[in-house]
Image 1: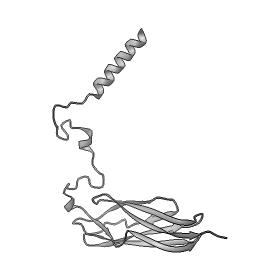
Image 2: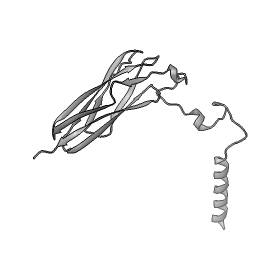
Image 3: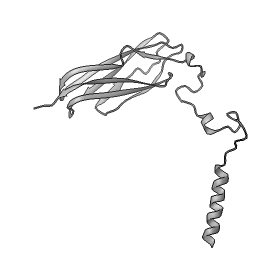
Image 4: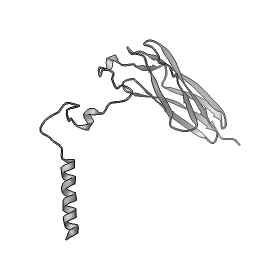
Length: 157
């Protein structure tokens, strides 16, 4: 009997705690929904007009290094231009594999300025067709861009 009362009380508390007020739309900061308050950290405080954001435009989004031997290290620089109206700040760049290491400029790129993200791919332990993606997170819209380095690796004999 005690267990039944306990379950009834717990269920009642859970229902009251999770109840949403659907009486109307509320403004952020005045009890609105959590989704109204979520901001992208890269663009927090920046106008929501996407025409007023930085834009990253790569000269090429894919690079095929051809055929190399296993154990070779392939490097390539992906050149880009900030075609936006505010300085471009790259927060991070990450690869789809630990064998590929990206490097990016730490200083902001002014509107109209250029920069590059270099990728170093170590083919050791790799063979056949390889395709490695690098995801760049910046104060752009959308806030993530991708470039790809790919090619064929012939195994050591």
